[in-house]
Image 1: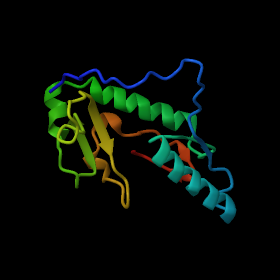
Image 2 (image 1 turned 60 degrees about the vertical axis):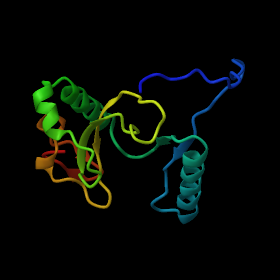
Image 3 (image 1 turned 180 degrees about the horizontal axis):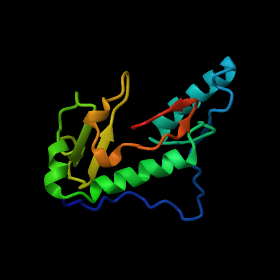
Image 4 (image 1 turned 135 degrees about the horizontal axis):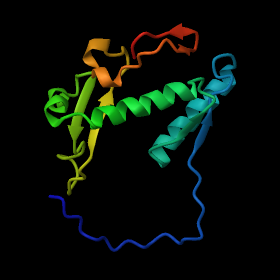
Length: 148
């Protein structure tokens, strides 16, 4: 199940330059046309690329750095601790899983992942592994967070 058969598709010429779609969120909360344009760019990027980069989102570097440190701390935990979060139940707000496309793809692609789903409502802080909680009182878009 981990064997990928080499496909016979053409290779992409190395002289092609790819640019990851970048979406600027500056003024999207105050300018309706900018908001519509950003949403259109996000829709196209999802359909054509499957990913994109967001700029001017208002999330401070310190928050992003702490998020990465929290995820790293989680993956460094003992397996016995991590497995308490393991689930394929898509209704859970916090899930630790491997091979997210195990039952859809022809071959498995081994990846350990932890996912936090916040739409339409974020998980309760106690659902989040303690090592992933943001514990400082950093100001983030006018809000103070004691955890998460």
